[in-house]
Length: 270
Image (tube, rainbow, N blue to C red):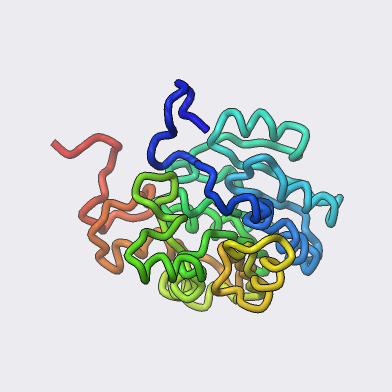
């Protein structure tokens, strides 16, 4: 692979690892896990896929729940164009700055599969997803696992985890325990973990990877959470950075006014 100029790939661009031939890349996105979780849910009327990519997960939803209205949210123009016909509606927006175009408690299921690791503004993103989700609705989240078995060995030898190199598209790591602590800290008793699975297991081929990920999910390459919203949401994710005095200028929209980083406008303070 080259960077479009015929030269060697730039550091951080996708390259083919020598062991890549053993691995089924589809396992990273775990369509079997998505299908399993979606099959557990009833009365899905409105389903939103945040960062829908090629539309694979919404197609799974349609197969299991053909009556559901599926809405794809994408920032990429090319992906958005390819989603036409795969979703009932496509919305183009920046999930790290824009509000989701849904009224409060109007969505039954929100999917975010292999998206959140690309983002900084998780407090705003979870604020908007939690605001839009009905009480009793579900979040289905898939993320790379920084605690995967191969990453543990890499760190043991002083190597950077494969999914979280500094010069790459991934900017935020996830593990099972830390992710659940994040939910409990920001939105106490707000979500119940209804399901947890792993998928992909480096560097093993398809059948072995699926077996290992099933029995050792916290050591799998990707981890998946099915979370049920248990109570009404009151802006807890958006207010958390200010409440916890986090010294980073997280974007929280107009919800927060008590942070040193809050500005009335997008312009820098004079």
